[in-house]
Length: 489
Ligand SMILES: [Zn+2]
Image 1: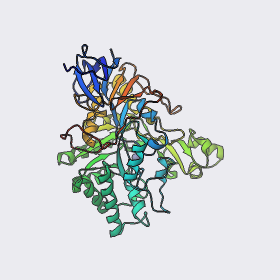
Image 2: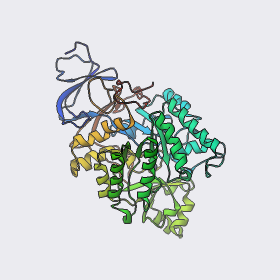
Image 3: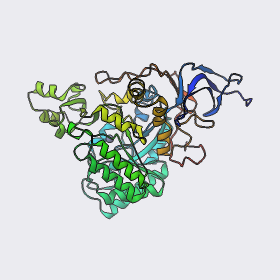
Image 4: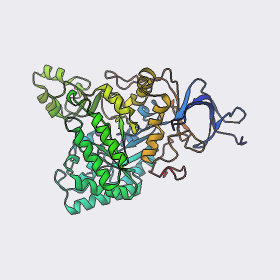
């Protein structure tokens, strides 16, 4: 045993390594930002010891689908992440990101999801701001395709001219050089939805050339979900760009069960060598901006925020329409700009998708919402409490792997997502018997139960302590075979 004094030893817990192996009793030693030793460390000196007897000690969770881009600046405490054991987040999803800023006069409704802070000129400026702020947790960032269109195109609703396509590709390349891990599309939103195959493939080729990736909120998650999955798989197939299908789901009862076909299609693509993965959040309701066209199609719609009618946050659209004496579509139009939760998914299907071997967990949390979807505060603890302990969909070890080593591999976050000697000390200690989400549709900002300690790069972030440093780093995409250095800070 080495004779150094460690900074911290987490003693006597059940260690789950994140790689899928069975738990084992061991102490975990931390020196600086790294895991220095795992085993019997009873005789090793340490500045601080934490008793984890009876508890699980696991790699910190990686939230692959975040919209916290501007929250690192606006609300840097990020309690909705740390309180459920999340130590790294991928931001910039669904086509919208903190940079680049639109040309004057260009805008898109989906940008309102991010926050109040003005967008940054480019990803370099965004990362500079993050470093100056010091992020609470680690962050990997995607560039939004909507941002690229809004920043490069005079008319973002049109098809790009050759020069505009070149400009978008140059901006993407710059963003990747600055440290972005890829780009995201939001094909269900405007202006991203105007894009056709040539535009998407042009961008994906730029990403592939830099070993970066493409995540997509696909064009349709309802009646046309199969074609929409096909579209994004084709981009990966034709360009070699690694692909993630975000928050995969099949909405509306008439489409429930279509994931049998979409998952089979994903497996076929993988068989052909396409690098593809997916994620879910563990709830039967979805959330995004309020779309008036959905008002009559989906029975249960709950308003999460509204600029003209902030008093309606948390109310059902049908109640608001009844009170106003109008139909639901009219009420929805009056509430916009607004956000909403749509109850149109089948919980059994969400669970089936989750069991797919390439499926990860992404909260898709919207911290800027007045009455947010509870996935913001409870996605990871809900998986461990409801899917693992109660429903026994899969073992705790397998579930932890889906939240740690698998996303680290998919996003190329070297030295993350595993408890091994020399890895970054991103660690969560939790009680497998009591861990659960507390956030509900009615009270969506309640912190989870059962999470006891969370460390990011060796420093405690939960429970929060006064004057505690913010230890997060900006993560770049790297090949996992490279050495364990996974950051640019
Ligand atoms: Zn999305």
